[in-house]
Length: 176
Image 1 (cartoon, rainbow, N blue to C red):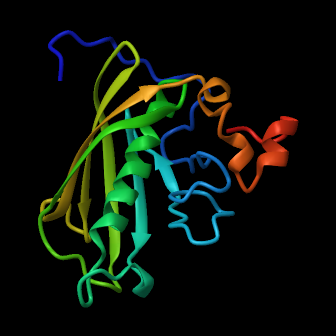
Image 2: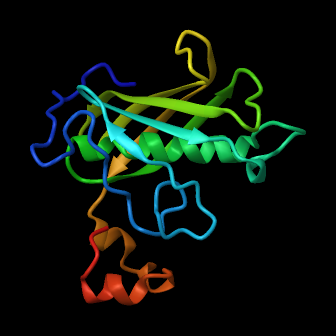
């Protein structure tokens, strides 16, 4: 992380602490309610520059026998930490994600994820995430990420036609 960071200011239109945050988009694999095979993780704005989420570890998420697949866990971190830029304003996309798998996470448990902004420099937002099974002092995984804020329309212009909701996006009805 760079030495010189921008001053963080919570965007006035972002969700208040404790409020459910709006999904990235309705078909987002991590948080979208219309994703046919997604995680559908509800996320809540926290105090300051944090986001909290809970995700049941279901049987279909199994990797090794009886435990979550590392890719599913990585996707959950990516999505929860990817919600953090919204606390500051424009959305961001992942440019770096590192996950440390500390302990096996059993199927049938509820994973709790806490994500926080560590700092910001221009368009880059530095984040961290911590996952636990009910005791934050006993983490099962942690992650670090870098997200870059984007202009949504410009960033997805060449790809929106591939979306399951392309007609809606192109008509301007839903908000990415």
